[in-house]
Length: 370
Image 1 (cartoon, rainbow, N blue to C red):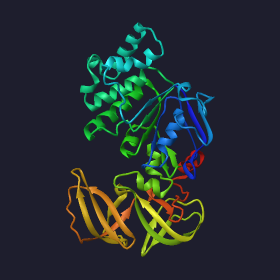
Image 2: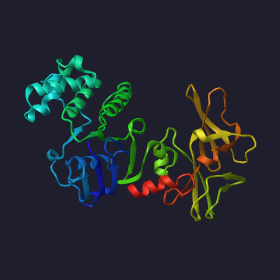
Image 3: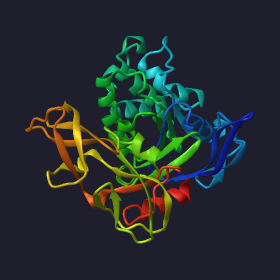
Image 4: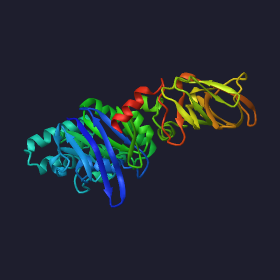
């Protein structure tokens, strides 16, 4: 396996720029998820790494070698598509072994490697079955087997679980991560599903309009989002934004919202007067009768182990993830308090996070990779 290094990658289709000056590194044996909505540039980025699209600018290095303009066949990568693209007239064994047969590998070696791969994927019991009669999860394992059997330098996967139902998808998320742990494959995985990305990836690149908004570990991206877009895209429910207008001096450790003085991590730069937003995750919101920041309960969602209670305030809706053992009623007035050390501060105009004691490291990494 090998490191993938992407530097200032750009792709334009006429006047439309699909990928804008993206830079990131996938370390040897690391699992990277390219995460974002449809049209954000993640699949175009993956196809450029694969050699299926040529970039307009920038470089792509695989194991130290510049492969920017190499053909796909010269890059020693394996691509797993959303559609399984299996050969229906072949059984499982022949589907998995076909890449080796095409390379002229001896039959005995093909047999050994196919059986080794099938055992790894726990499909050795169906090697002689037709692929046309297999369930979706088994068909995806066969597609993975065909990629793994080649032993390439890296794996590229374009929403490989997108056609599976929810039950199969949950199973395959676990199995893909376990497989990655066993073979230590350098992997780039495209998905629009934040749950898939958070569950499987060592690092995530969150993309929006062709730009990498943030690059980091799932923990960094969830706890220290670099922009309002990332904060809103990651999390279910997403981060709350409590909007207010103010200017803040460098070193400020609190913000005044109405009659409430809300403590927050120390900010590292002066903030000019304008519209700001305090960001807080629902699990960091609590109710307190003593708090001057108040609102009326708008609704609640019972989730079994907990509940999501939505409160309407003068500064917008706020969702709180609370224990399920207490009932709340629409219209009840409540006060809100926050875990001050977990608050983010954003400038609404740019959408960017204000550097603070909370997010210094995350913003440095985002600036380096974005």
